[in-house]
Image 1 (cartoon, rainbow, N blue to C red):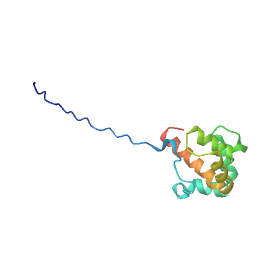
Image 2: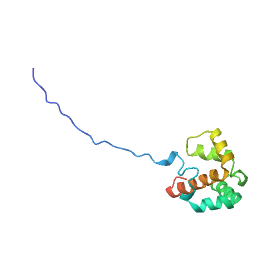
Image 3: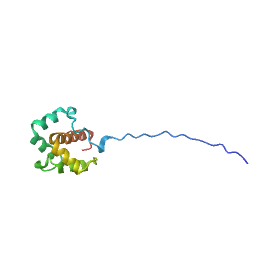
Image 4: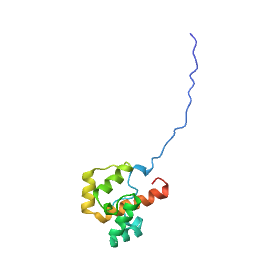
Length: 113
């Protein structure tokens, strides 16, 4: 009986880093990441709502609604639910709209909007 030598080869391990493509680019109350958006949302809410709607090719009157948030979240496979969207839009309308606008701006910069 002959003994066969065992050959062991090691292959380099490939690590992939997941990007934030399927999550919100900023947190709900992350106003200091873009003060201009926060300022505009706070003092010119209707203008910001129309700007977000225009960015999404939607009607201007649909900007700050639950439906708009849900459509955006669904388009980019962002985890969440309609119930969650409703609570956020009803309790924090300005923060919600600003989060969407910040997300749009960041996705445009990354070339994935």
